[in-house]
Image (cartoon, rainbow, N blue to C red; front, side):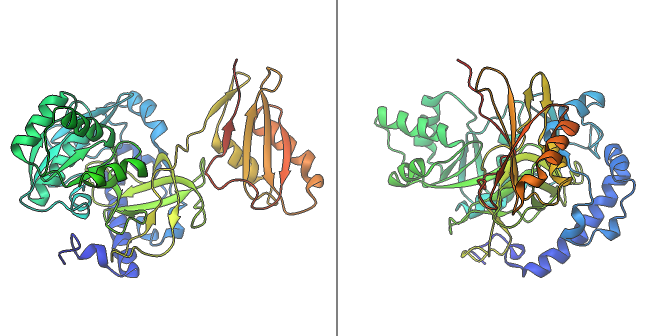
Length: 412
């Protein structure tokens, strides 16, 4: 078992589904009873009836893009939290501001599993360069490291020379933080001719970790791994030594849905990451739309972990734009497609070839395309209140990148 954090990681997939949906039923009942927003949103939901992934699509999606207005209307958490002052250990603020509670349970954000997969072990000193100010990232990694049995140096951000000095003198086993700040630190160490021989591993998050930077760290003896987490949900997925996608955390259910809807997409198709927490009773987020794009990978990881895998962060799903002074949303594109069974994929392209805004809905239709033209044009106008053109494409011709609205306007 020294290759895996616990036996949950190597469960048979069928066993995991049974146990996670049993936990989901408890979480749904708890959310309805303790969180006013979910009491309203889930009023017609029978928790005992949600026993498979096919049933998830009947639950409403709450998107991160809604939270700011919802929290303004009902402070501090928009009615989605099931905790109160004195029970929550801390409260954080993400840009917006959007507020998030932290519960008192050990490893509340579930980052110990990701740290273990990255090679951290009990007894290690972890140099934590995530921010400890306002946002929860510093606490997320610190509480995970503590649960793993590690000691933490709370480096935070900035003060690069002091970071180098602390690393040289305390000899941490590894770093957690953004990849760009680790690059700044090791470059500063080179400039000062300071060796950092103990720095052998890193768990990186918060921004892209390109292969070129991974290779640069590896050349210095630093083995870097990615974690995908958010301030609302905690850990969502993490990289293992197999380096084949990101393995979904054991404490959440992850779906990939068509942007603007709650409908699951096929394996390998890019869509929005929607997450349900199973054990965060203080903030029981149900079908929370992250606004991030990713895709499911087939099969299981060669490292022995059997949970589903995603490709990692592939962009943003919230592609709302403004055309001729009116907002156009991905959900409106989905509504147009829903009216026409002949349409497969669709993408609304917005451009301004002669200085004026133009919308063109590119649709994949198998045959007899021209016979559908007038009806689709009418649906565009009815749903968006704007005039749009239609361009027909062959099935499979549109890119599989999760884009529903592609704004390519140029302003000189």
